[in-house]
Image (cartoon, rainbow, N blue to C red; front, side, top):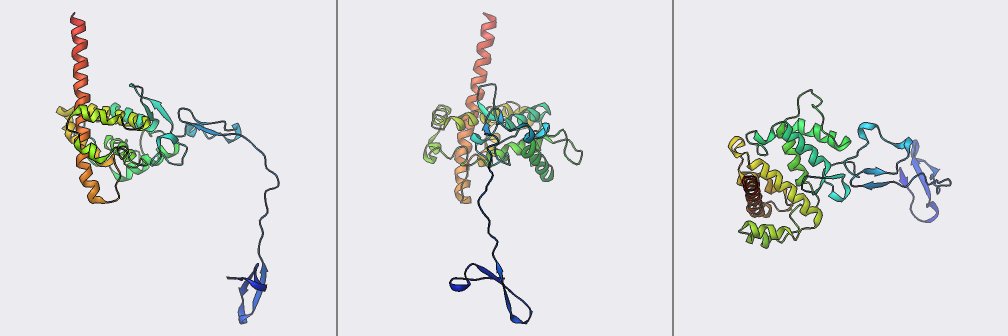
Length: 276
């Protein structure tokens, strides 16, 4: 089918038919809407999901708590995700809290190689699709197999890896590279926007929880920092990404060690208070 250009043939379509003759056709015209009604004003609240949806348009109960304002729970900024507060008051996407809770409940913290061992790719994809749709983790996947702790850990890393702009990319690379103490690393965290600072604090506490079980999971602070570092930044050039990941690993290691030290100090202070 050819569309006529300018001149007398403009505005018409012609079909080539048997014998070489051409038959003109009238182009279909689409007019402006004539009947428009304002049905509802719908907004997305980070702590309550979609608000103002009419009853007849409400989703099924299982899907009522949308994980984000997008069709996916991954690769979306925190401003567009449904959030909740962790024990430290950080505003964190709900799906991360769901993944963390299930990981802990299933003994993930004491599983050898947690966050290092790769998950089954097919299971991870199925659980990911369920999170996108309903914002929850199924009790088991479509094949009836229990959701493995390595799948849960892999999805946590994937969420950070796909976060738009990367979690730590707002920090000057040269300053990250210069961090040699936990105190310097802590001060540098203050340069992050509040939403990303809260996410980083949640992630560091998670890593510290893993490192505190090193005797059973063989994942000390440096090992945990090593597997998380590549997921915390985004660089188009693989060589640049590899070099920066080493600096990020050292930065995260300092933060994890600081978190562990603070816990020991708090435990010692609580014990001293009981004794006195």
